[in-house]
Image (cartoon, rainbow, N blue to C red):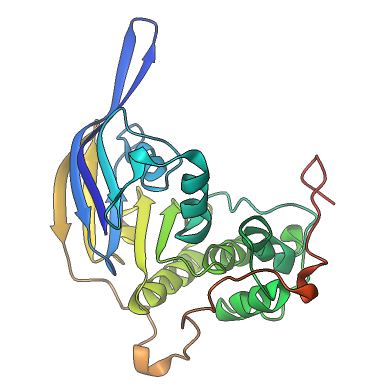
Length: 264
């Protein structure tokens, strides 16, 4: 469960003060699919950073599964980011000149995990890229690159997915395709929080929270747009839980090695 209690975020530059979030109270239950909407400057990206333990509020309390995140040390926050939260970004954030499967392996390199190659392969198969394992990002379409990013977000078996404008760089067909993935992930029990400014994307959510000037101006539960979603009885069980991460075994010794420029 996500709980924000009287959360504010203030940025100060000299005498200038910008309140990106102002006294936010918000609870997101486990298993919900929530879209956080707002125009540029509304505070939605700031909220995303706080929910993802990438930034801390200036005041107020953020509890994740009952734990006061503000009291955690950086190594504990890094562990939460690696194992409890899966991140998906608008720009994909894939490492160039690095295959799809090795991009998906990265969270296990940093966070520990057994059978890295097999788990990465299974994650890519779940998002329909079992035939693109060794393709480089520049050999994939925008929609396929975002699928790799979703697979990477899933490989540590997180309970929550945070997606920041995940369809912002995609065409209409790829947008529907990616949103189908998020709906299926949610149907399989994962909490999904989407940051978006697109009403068509928000239609896939069960709940829409709208921000303006750092305030919540509406919080509406709605009927999902499932027109393009494959019914549960017509799906494979591709989003069943992945085996929990464990200590790396001997077969993981050849994991990706990163050079200073982000390549190999």
